[in-house]
Image 1 (tube, one colour):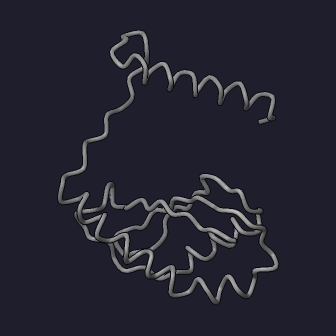
Image 2 (cartoon, one colour; image 1 turned 30 degrees about the horizontal axis):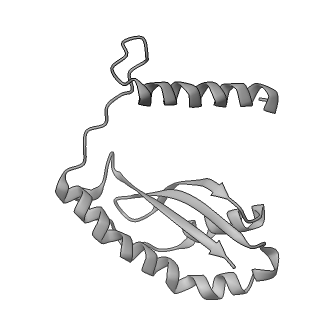
Image 3 (tube, rainbow, N blue to C red; image 1 turned 135 degrees about the horizontal axis):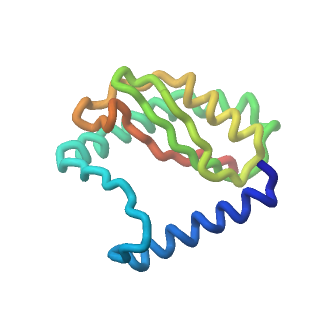
Length: 138
C-alpha cells in the first residue's frame, strides 16, 4: 500500500477512535469488542513479573550493546513483546523508534535471544503475557 493510500486510512482510524472516545454511547459508532478486565491477582502477578524481565534483559545488555555501539544512533526504541507460558517470545513489535533501524533490529534480536523465566499462569491472557519495554541509547 502506498503512503498516499495509507495516510488517509490512518487518519480515518484516528478520527473514528477519537469520536468513539468522545461519544462512547453514540449508537451510530461501531462498538469495540469488550475485553474482560484482568483480575486483581492477574494484574499483581504481571506487575511482580516485570522486574524478572528487566533483570533477564539487563544481564546481557551491557556486553551485547557495547560490541555494536558504533552501529547505533542515539535514541529510544519502544517495543512490546509477548511471552508464552514457557517464557518464549511469540510476538515482537516496534511501537516507536527514535534511533536507527539497526538499533530496532538489534532490540528484536536481543529480546528473542533472551531466556526469560516462565511467567505466572494467572498473568497470562490467551496464553500470553504482553510486555512493553523501552531500550535507550545515549
